[in-house]
Image (cartoon, rainbow, N blue to C red; front, side):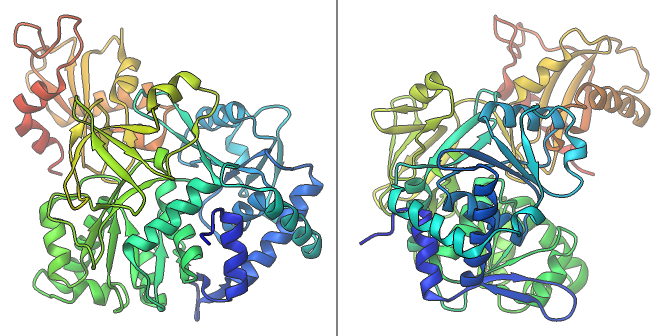
Length: 517
């Protein structure tokens, strides 16, 4: 019989007694088996219950990845609660809004973070990870047993906030069944080896890292190492010798750069030397991967297995593997149990057990996104006879950075309506490490329009206007244009909205120059 909930998978892994969490550090890395992780989570569950947390209650976690983050996630689910993971890179006002909107009754936060959140709801209870360690394990196990009897695949397990395709944050409701089915299907599609060891770098607050690293390792009963930081990733890899890394394209580009810098461009084993010597490949998603990056890692004997997903699908929709390598240009094969089809307007629709229950407190958006059981992804795509998925663009315009972060440009550009310095602005940066912007100044009389001084002046203005936005929504590159966009040149619609494709095509060389340094 299939295991249908995460709380059941945790029980199964506890009984199996294999795998667990590995923590790199000075000397020998520390290893904590899934059995011990479950025991620690039971203590945390009892501590949360004593604070009044019960079935259906929303509990937020605001912290970087850690063993304690994992324990808190499992503990909340052991009580039948709803995990609300918060992206700590967001601005304080954005975090406060998500806490308010989700109705979270309790926030588990890492030390020092609360001081950065001055706008928290007055009735919010805030605790540290240390507080959760003080519960009674036996009492927690009893509470977990009650939850296992009462939980079902339809039980709400998590609310994950995403910017969506409208620019407004939405809380994606993922059930126990969504998460359990997606973890099992992802593992089925990719395969398992007894010595699998993933080294985690992507944040658990995002669905991709949480699913592809944490939940898949749990379901597979394999080991998961937690990198201490972005800066320590290479040192941690050399210590723990991972077999798999789940990444976004930006991280791959940085690893390529580091390998070439240390071992030269012609060393065909540079990546293995850089990352511990046991690597079988990378699992990549979040944005399109450049051909030259794909070819470099293939030549290193550490292939990149691309996939596709979105938070509303828990998040994995398709995956590649050594057994089912995708044709170049495809984003993997649909997971077992997942169906895909193309709507009349070219939009990719998917159906399967991983499709969300809906958006929290947003029935109109839910009705628009899920129609007759099919999730409207917002992406243009086709599925061939063998189930391989190819993407052709986006039905609605948003920018996917190399990190996998997505930005709705119109929401950012709206900040500059009526700005005394800027007449027109258009964000760019698809597949890049950070956002850039084309800017038309109201005063274009400068003798050298794109001088360093001029660009710095504009970047300062952009930073001031966007000071309350998240880090990935900040503009880091700018290119100043000598004349405004017009309807006559078909750069603007009759409603004076941007024709982005026309502008990007016309100024393609400027985009390359903007991101050249």
